[in-house]
Length: 203
Image (cartoon, rainbow, N blue to C red; front, side, top):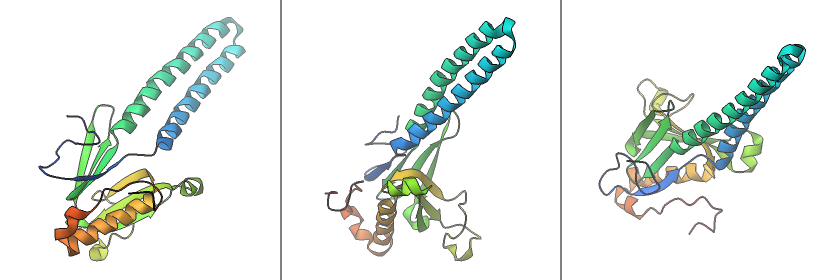
């Protein structure tokens, strides 16, 4: 079964999906730009080397252009496929994240709400911050962590959501789920799905 906006692998009976988390499209664009930059550099290096050896100039140019196209085609497919498989689900019971580890394998990580101790949000840089794009870290209760408060670095038990639109609002939304789940569990069924829009335009 493929993960979609309405269902995911391992979903429990009657488990309600509150929000499907995907990286912002800019993340894909940046990934593609890196691939294209590598393709340009590789082809230019070969063409410049070919210019130094006049008898092999034509061969180097052909090889350079071939590698340029090869890197563009394969790199684009890899980036798009990778981004499509990087997805997380916020439900009324837990957080489930699917993360690609190789071209053919995707690992899943599940964190029940009673295991979560802290939410942290931060932007990757100033520009993305102005665009409301950043990261959300869900800290899990981990043995040996001081006071189980989720302070410090990210551990293997934590879940990190990268390049998320309205990342601060999503962090606050998860905090609301945690409070409801732990303090007013009967009201968890009343939590509305998260809508990544400005306040006043969400419902």
